Length: 196
Image 1 (tube, rainbow, N blue to C red):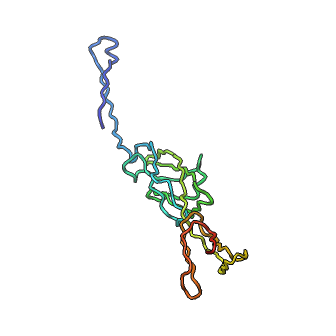
Image 2: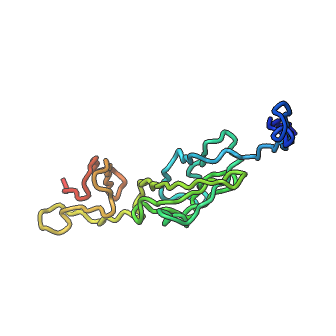
Image 3: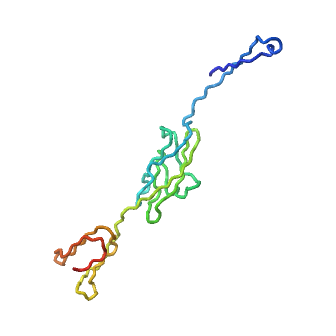
């Protein structure tokens, strides 16, 4: 308790003389500061990208607020503008944003989420983030090629075509005869080879 003095004039002083003074002493309680009493002014998500074909539960990044004591904030995904990607993510008790689904870049390359940071006093701030899905090189499930090559110019099996081979990649092709001897090799970025 701290005393607070306020000078003034007593009733008697008003009626008879100005020499009397009145002091009112108020005792005001000192209230302790509440934990987390600093309202959040910023929410940060340092990493805003995750690779496709991830495992469920993969961490994207830790959420941060303006208080050095990260334990004084809780983070939640909330409804509002730019929240259409909320269902694809979760936030754990340590404030880490995690994948709730397996992402596929070819299906969707970014997700918008809306996050709320709440301090111990119940004050909160909301922010939106765009999470990018990084494309990962995916090996084709199965390479397909015809197993007969007769380069005699008759238009039948003169070309060797390899299906599902990535165009533009530096691929190396080896052809062996039935005795296991290499008869042809070539480094190429094409999927169709002319028989030599």
